[in-house]
Every structure is written in structure tokens, then in C-alpha cells.
Image 1 (cartoon, helix red, strand yellow):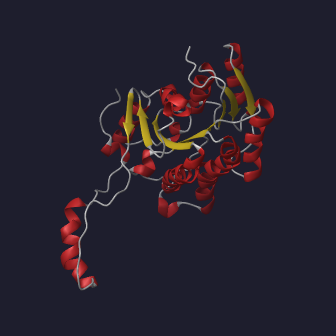
Image 2 (cartoon, helix red, strand yellow):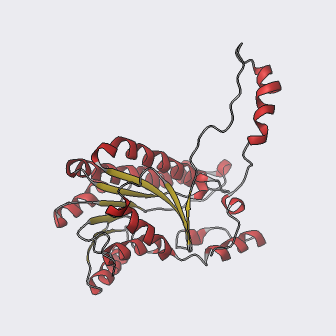
Length: 295
């Protein structure tokens, strides 16, 4: 049994099943004490029971991440019970897929509230504790739906790219306190991804690939990033796809053009865009960019 996070206290949101469950189990098996957060009391308690049966320590929590007050309750639960908090894993999620021109305000808000606002609220609640103790690790779940793109997920994609910016800002603002913040884009078949449409032959083939990717495969990287072994790893974006671990690029200038007299719209059309066009990114989706079979 690993002891990479022995003695540390972790909050894992959305930990009643899928990726979150695998993370909670792995952190506990590696010596951590875990607050298993999920809006389903039955699911959260089942994970706690599994951890306790294996000799670990855990408690269930059913507060929502989507409001500041309830998110603070999640962190307070950890501190009141275990005396501190060392690790936050922002994993809670939902999907309300709809083509952009048909998306309702409610479908937009429901996803932003859980993914982006939830990641902020839980992280902010833990930040004061991390600052005071001058240590801590944030691990946030992003997605290639945002990093690359996908159909019918403007709400989810926007939230997941927002989380990337949030993570980078946390890493910059809290580096002086030895606090780290990283993102993981997980590839896994879970209850959430089971709602992905599978009507066309292409969609069915994609779903078959997703079903090969086990949710538990994400956990080892989380345990590592939460441990002291990762003390110099921060502000990165990783991906986990079956037995692959990826490091994603981050936006940087790749081409520049200069006009000493200043640009006019006509100059841009005649000079700037033709000069940069070969470096344009294609309009692609995640499965088109990462199109090889899981290994």
C-alpha cells in the first residue's frame, strides 16, 4: 500500500462515483483522510464504507459546491473533523448538452454553477487554511471539450476553460505560500459521460472508445500531484487516457507581424492574415485531435 499522502486531509467533490470515487479510494489507500463529497448521500456513504472497510479514514458530505456557503461547509467539515485540510480535488460535475443556438439560460447556468463557480467556491474556502499553514495542493478537472473543442457543449467547454484560468491564477497568487494548483483533463467512461449522444456511426464508435477508459485510471496522477513528491509541479495541465499521461500545451504567441506605420483594416486583410494563415488552428473537436485508440 502506498503512503504518498499519509497524514494529509483531502476533500474530493463529486466523489460518489466514477472518477471522484476512484480518487477518494486511492487517496485513502495512500494514507490520506478523505471527505467524500457528493450530493447523493447514499453514494457518498457507500464510498466511505468501502474506505473504512479497507482500513482507511473517511467521512461523507452532501453539501453542494454551487454556492459559497455550502462549499465552505465542505471545507469546514474536513477541518472540524481532522483538524486541517491539505488537498482539494475539484471533481464535481454535470452536463446539460445542447447546441449553442438552442441552449437555454438555465442549461448554461447549471453547468457554470457546478464546474466553474463550484471550483472557485471550494478552492476559496480552502485557500485561507492553505495560506496559514503555508502548504496545500489543488487539483482541478478540466476537459478537452474546452482545451480543444466539442459539439453541443458550449456551457461545459466554457466552464472547463475557465477552470484552467482559475488554476493558473491560484498557482501564481499562492506560490509564495507553497501552494500548488494543477489541472487534469480526464478521459473516462462515467455516469456523466454516458449521456453523450451515440446515434450516428461516428458517435457510436467514439462512445465505444470511451467505454474502454476506466475511471480509476485518473487516481494515480491525483495522488502524486497531492503528495510532497510534486512540490515543484504547479500551473500545469495534464491529461490521463487509459494508461497514457499527457502534458498539454498552453497558449503562447506562435506568429507575429509588424507594420511600422500602423495597421489599417485593409493592410490586415492584405498582409497580416495571409502571413499568419498557415499557422491558424483548424476547427476540430477533441476526438479528431486525439484520435488514436486508448492504450
